[in-house]
Structures are given as structure tokens and as C-alpha cells.
Image 1 (cartoon, rainbow, N blue to C red):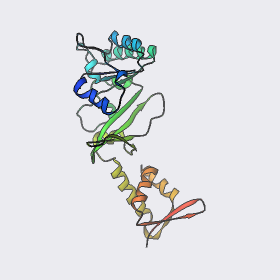
Image 2 (image 1 turned 180 degrees about the vertical axis):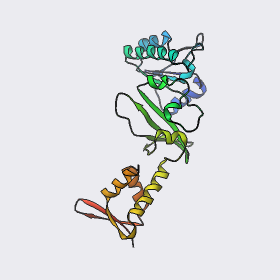
Image 3 (image 1 turned 180 degrees about the horizontal axis):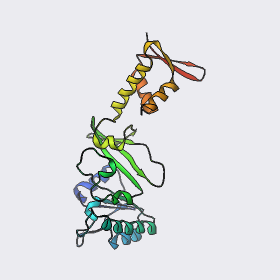
Image 4 (image 1 turned 90 degrees about the horizontal axis):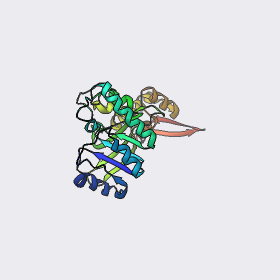
Length: 254
């Protein structure tokens, strides 16, 4: 069971149609009634709803709407107690909590300081994921693991929102959190172009290099092995490949 609480999108005209399109089981998506009283992070109805329905996940979207009108979200001493109570609920019930937040409009700067409100929003969370639009590919969004307190950070993953086909996963993507937020490069096309130039430079003047040496040089330049493979594929008509023993070697075609 999932509790999805949103203060921005209409349940009937937006949320439900999207769930239907995603083939969700609507009987297992629940909402806490806010008709008579608005919900806050410290509201006792959250734990009650989780317990009564056996919910395994609750989503609050956006977090700023559930702080309560008397809470200043820029003051750490007011934010921390609310998060502590919510964390206690999660621990008692075993229900995962996802808080969706908005970023401020400031361009540049570190990702840790782009969230609205106190830095304690980020400090209290065990895992922080950033989602942003790729500048050169308007239908592509990337999820970047910006903080992970309990496990190694995952690799950035991209998905596509196509006007005709809808949602689909793309796979791993070479970009950092700060690059994603600033819009300054970092997307796959740019990284692949960098990798192509690096390969051509390494193989200039008739040089022949092992694939392992190319990967090592790319890694030192901040380019992943996956991107190098994509670059080699793009350069297929310009470079040769041959296997000597267990290693592959590359050179420019004459």
C-alpha cells in the first residue's frame, strides 16, 4: 500500500490519469483526507494512516506544503523537530518516506545549497536524489544520487518523457549533480564528443594503443569506460581494432 499526498496536482484530473497510464493498481494508492484539516509532517494522522492500511511507502509532494503555516522552514530549530518525529514514525512502522522538494532559483553553486529552506532538509534525509532536465535533450531527465548515508551512492540514471510513448528508462548517464543543476555540459553527447577527441588525439601520428590504455587515459580525464565504448562505436569508420592475445588494440585507419 502506498500513501501519495500531494498539494500541487489534482487527484482526479492529474494524479489518477497518470497512475492509470502507468498501469498502477489504484486500490493500493491511498490519500489522507485533508478536506477539514491540512496535513503537516508532525500530524498524528500520518502514523495512523500507515498503521491502519499497512502502508509500506508514503510520499509527500512537495515537502514545503506540509511544514505547517506556523513553521519557518528556513530555521533549523523548527525544521529538526518535525523531521525527528517523522523519522520516529518511519522507524516504528517500517514505512519508507519520500519527501519531494523544490530547488531555489539560484544558478550555479553546490547542489547541497540549492534546496528551498534550511539545510536541515538535506541533513535529515538518509538519501537525496536530484532530478533535472538535460539541456541539450529536452525529453531527457536524469536522476543523480547526491547523498547516501547508509550505502554507496548509485550511478546517475536517465529516463525519457516522450510526448507520444510516455515514460521509458534510458540507463546510466555521465553527469554530476552540479553539472545537472547548472546546465553547463555534463550530458552524454558532450562527454561522448570529448571521448572521441581524446581517442583521436591518442592515436594520432600512427600510434597503436591497447583498449586498456585508452580507458585509463579517459578515466584520468573524467570520462567513463561506458562513454569510451560509445565514442569508439561512433568512430568505427575512422579507427581499426584488432585482438592480440587477450587485449584489443586500436589505431587510425590510413
